[in-house]
Image 1: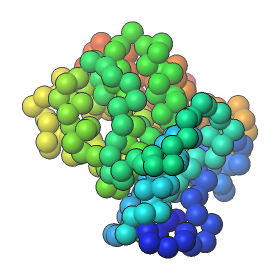
Image 2: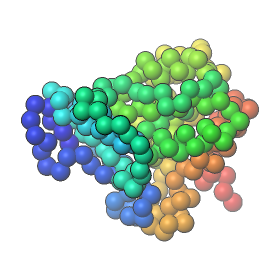
Image 3: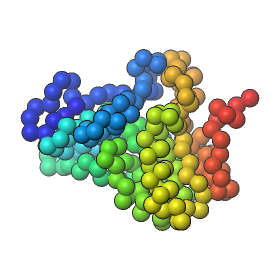
Image 4: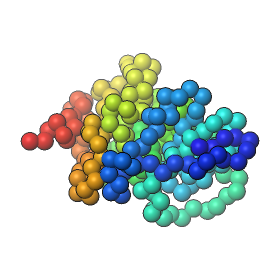
Length: 232
């Protein structure tokens, strides 16, 4: 947690998320706890660059800010040219990949999953990284959906607690007439995160699964069922 105008209290940014076999006790994203608290801003980093840019903005912000750093990304390495003055404004999303067929909105560790899915998909996917979950960038998302005509959210959370419900409902209100298909959410099952590595890999959305879900949506303009409802 970062509070503007002074040193960060406590342990600073939190390392949530699945992907390293910590089981149901330590693998939740936790953003839903903070998004429901009025007055808190909530950001989620997706790589080294966004971690630096969001943390600097959070430290300087006059309001309390929670910055979540998905722990699975700590092992990732990337080239980043350090700039002491670099900031990512809170509440501003980033178009990580332009596209024309569908808008795929995501954040955190799911950004790399979304980009990998876009590379293999026959659909031209525009990937939007929210970066800030509250307040989230409604304008960037709405403008993207108007261009593509389709909306998919990719969330590391069950549907019941995921941020995608707010995104989908807002777009359905603001841009319903521009949609070619119903909005679709790619989420986790409504179950605890498993400890087993094989089960956890199945539990989390993979690039292949995301590409398959989007291919069905684009080709039929109907939301596909999640894998656990199709499983025998």
